[in-house]
Image 1 (tube, rainbow, N blue to C red):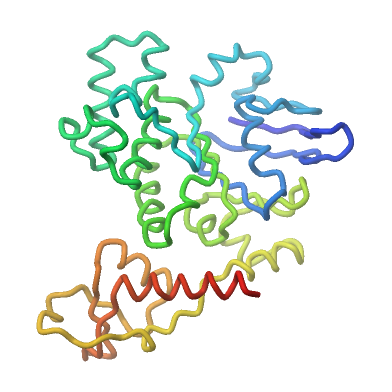
Image 2 (image 1 turned 135 degrees about the vertical axis):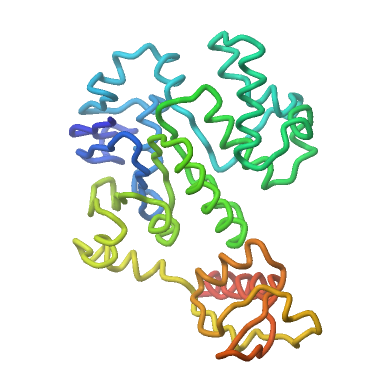
Length: 314
């Protein structure tokens, strides 16, 4: 569906930020661009909807060069989600979502129905939220609205530029699960930028690892992990490995209601911890068939804060 042929980008006429990319993204694919800061992933993403003009080569969508599409037609076909959602504060949630459908001159009834459908899709009750202003929503709710705003006019392609990077790991894990569920429903072509290898492995059908503007490897999550093509890919995977979280060191006392809490094995992986903490403030920890303590969301967040401080200090 989307094809890059020898695509390069230079901002100053000398240094190539993107260097002769050749890749193809299939219809309905969740395609992840990943790499360190400055590797060209956001530039690559923005060239698809012509927010940034390419220097050499060409990009096609359904066999047609993007330069041959009228700019408004191209962007109507492409939804765009940023890290900073940037909802218009003076407009209601419904008005924010309806911007592109109104530009496409949809009838009012169709727009109202579409807004209701999308709000329901992300668990926001339409009659409760459609008339609220962004300031009346939590950060997570605003994030959901930002995603469905990109879906409002039913575009073929969704571009997502590190949309969850500002969230704490527990909220981020929840949004990743929501996005995977949403993709099963909408079946769109998603191009997703991240610097987090764990996020890429969780979300992507295929992953493109970029370094200094060039492609190091394109493959499925299994191929990237099990058969890294270059030393850079191997190092990048290892640098993004999950933190070493010892559940036993963070156990708290066993309350009377422990048997009613969700259960977690004392040997659970980091991803299993995050997945359960998405919906629970406290879980019972089992060793064998015995409850040996409880783990709280607060303890997990405190661990993450300590990890972040140590990384800054290194």
